[in-house]
Image 1 (tube, helix red, strand yellow):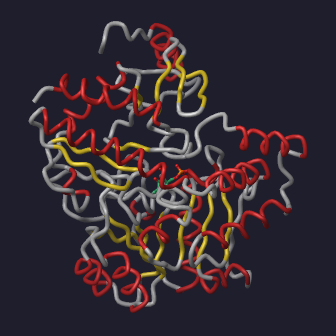
Image 2: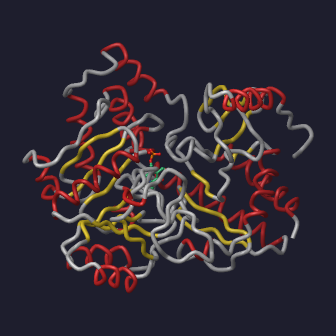
Length: 431
Ligand code: PLP
């Protein structure tokens, strides 16, 4: 780390958090978010400010939500207005109708919407809808895909290279009974998916996939893969579910459905949907919600449709509806991807970037785009860790896993700072 990058106050807070954790007072430690512990005190537009006085250009966007940046005047105004009208009602209000109607308008194939507060919850609601709709229990998920921290989906997220493609728990505290109905399959492989359906005839309620594998290297779906997945689901009477917690309102206003031109039965939304407020949703084909409308299944939550979060979501969608905004974000991301690849080539380092302009990943050591999680294991993660530390020393904040998030607050001004930082950091990483 550059010696001029002082972190005295952050280090003191980190020590306090460690002491606090040891004595069970609090658990305010998020490991791995920066190469060294940083504590933030405010954010504005595309910048984060830490307690040691650094202004950092932020490309983490808080793991995706901050798609219009921080301290946005439209979001601030709408949220402040709602705060004056009430924090929460625990009952229906006009905003949730307006938001559902807006989502139906802008997301292709979405006919009905339900709301929750986090991606984790909304994924569970989608699974319950699929089970209630089909009367079946099993779900298929793919290796390397993340769908929140519930035991039934937190399996085979980061298996080791010599682990089998199987349903493997991620952490202690996951009883086998909770993931007994989860089948894990290799992604981007329609034959593997077809074989999984054949191995469990008439038992699969739904197939859950990130439409672009943002959580493991931003792998892109092979041409025809997503439609093939949807078709296989139809053929076998299962519900196709896109987990769009990352891709929703990010790849395009209509998310992966619009970007890839495919319509699954259900999609799950979160993160960018409310620009940093805690809002999530499940949207999709009306028919799949029938069990809910008929009262045969339950979707609940004290904070579902929370008025402040709904106000933030409506404001975010309004900002994101501005003409040209996605083109600008994609261009910004593409400029960074080009700079990373050109700079690596200049320094004799193999590097590929994968994904799209608004969310992509950089892989040191790979010469071809990874197709799935297994391929990403061949990348040189240690080189990226060094690169990220070098970027931080130059005032650019990145995620630990090679992923970059681009938002509407990133402008040419930030590029002027980031592009030279990439070149200098690449030099520092060495070959
Ligand atoms: N699904 C995907 C694709 C995610 O990336 C995440 C979180 O990163 C989740 C679900 C869970 O969302 P949350 O953290 O809001 O519970």
